[in-house]
Image 1 (spheres, rainbow, N blue to C red):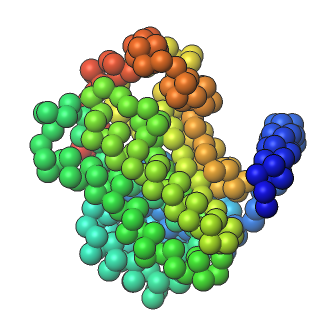
Image 2: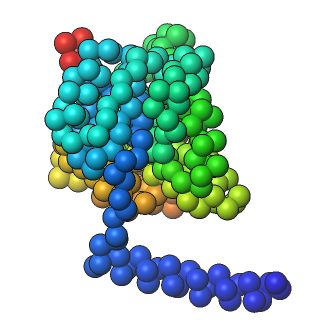
Length: 306
């Protein structure tokens, strides 16, 4: 195809895709049926992981729960069973350990079957400034928040590719789109998670595997305890998010094959501004939004909460 014809095609398709997006603002997208799908959630022992398990359970899915906390996933399993899950399987797994991820993944494939919805949710935060963070904690942050995604994809994606069916869900963060003072290692890990999910999603499309969907979730702070002590400067613009509402929005995004989910909605505008504003103006906006002081009062999750 020559340059002129291809350019015309791109212009017309771009116009159509924009019209399609406007239509979906008024007409809700059709939700897919996930009853019977095997859903694996990492970090399912508490917080958003537990709440997503309960939401998926209500759709009659088979749940596979991973966490390093055995008591936590047992409680999640109890809630999920009461919530309508057809079956629930629990596995203790340290997602920072590649060999353990592969070992437990093989156990899942033997005992449960092929995973068709993979939710990479496990995450940790040091809450320390870069020069104050021990090397071991920086490494652990990268291993849990980013590298674990590589190993779970390697373990479960082949079956999805063979069937051209599946869904890859990455629970990242708004800190994977915009750098935050005091969160250098966490931001690096979440930027990596976003980039990895985007790239693999494109690889799948390029090879014709359009039956495998990707959803990348980038929320602001959520009231799960992980960022306890942190305060938001302008609560109306950037509120601390309610965990139950976030879990429901994530499941809705999966059911409608939404690729990007940024929460709250103001993050779409803020992220766009970051990419077009001059650097000095971007820094000014960051100061205005409180990005330079978000972590000043960080306490994090207590042992009791864990």
